[in-house]
Amino acid sequence: MQTLEFQAKQIFKEYGIPLPSGFLCTTVEEAVRNYDEIKGTVAIKAQVFSGGRGLAGGIKFARDPTEVRSAAEQILNLSIRGERPTALLLEEKIETVKELYAAVTWDYPNRSPVLIASSRGGMNVELVARDYPNDVTKIQLDLFEGFRDYQSRSLATRIGLVNGEALQYARVMSALWQIFSRHDAELVEINPLGVLKDGAVVALDAKLNIDDKSVQRQKEFLGRFVGLLKAANQGIEYRRTEAKRLGIPTYVEMEGNIGVIADGAGSGMLTLDLVSDYGGKPRVYSEMGGEITPELMENTLTMIVQVEGVSAVLINLIGGLNRMDEMAIGISNYFKKHSPRIPIVIRICGTKQEEGYEILRKDGIDFCDGLDEAVKTAVKSSRG
Image (tube, rainbow, N blue to C red; front, side, top):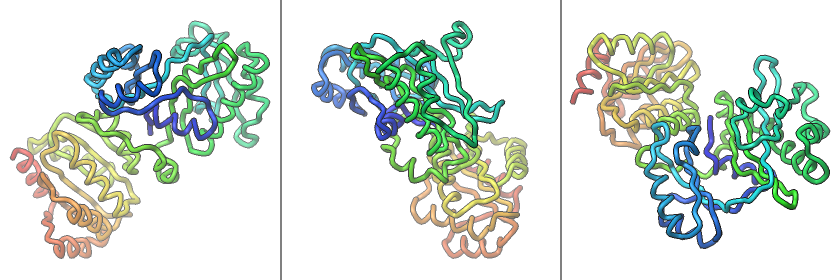
């Protein structure tokens, strides 16, 4: 699960990592108004999940309210790899004497966490490793011994830092490790970490990716983020991340107009094939797995219905491990909270199916007896 820069910086701040002064802005007027709190030159940064925002024009600098307005308007109207910015981060522009790189991630081939440092921040670390291999250094961590403070100090000296700079870099690396280990992260990264004239360090950018499989365990932690800010076009990366946050294991977007929800890979693939055989085209496919709760069923249905371009939803659930009475409760809860704007076609069978039927009947929710009937109905409904 990816986070936006401003969300990662919220967490970094809690762990004592120095940051530039800044404001989150959702409109041009808000950016202009907040500029008065910073003055001087500011950086205006698109909040998107996609990489390469700088090259795409998603980061601009401004020196007065007029330039702020112009830059904010341009960025909010950008499409960065198909994603529209959800917000802007307005920050003071920091003058640095050097830029560094600091990260903690997983070394999957060696099955261990790894600390990575470089004296060349602000660049793609893979390119630095390729073109300047002597400027990147790593320390593999033993899973049983964990992190030791001397390792972060060792990294600092390896990239040429001394005295106060080395100590501050070590503190930042120690904080990154705490975030990484406590919150099931896959990547915690600062690129660049700016060094000021007085030797102080400041995280000019921030990246935090949480392991998808730990989203349920990290719910309380993730709930502390400022909510994702919705734009007119949220973009596929937003929706993928939102699906992960809701605990949906599989979320795939396509180019049709039917939302398909299944509880297993086999039944899901069969459903997609039948949709195609009957002349339909899936817009989004969601597979929930073998341990579905009513809450997950409700969340998945809520998510799929909201996807732009979906004109009908087909739910095909075959209860083995999953109980159809619990699935029916999740579907019923959705109908009680929403007035569906599009047809929702339901087919459930297997464990506790009669109990599931009774729950749906009681709440006046129609369902189909067979898969063929359900697919044909969904395809026909998707055509209006």
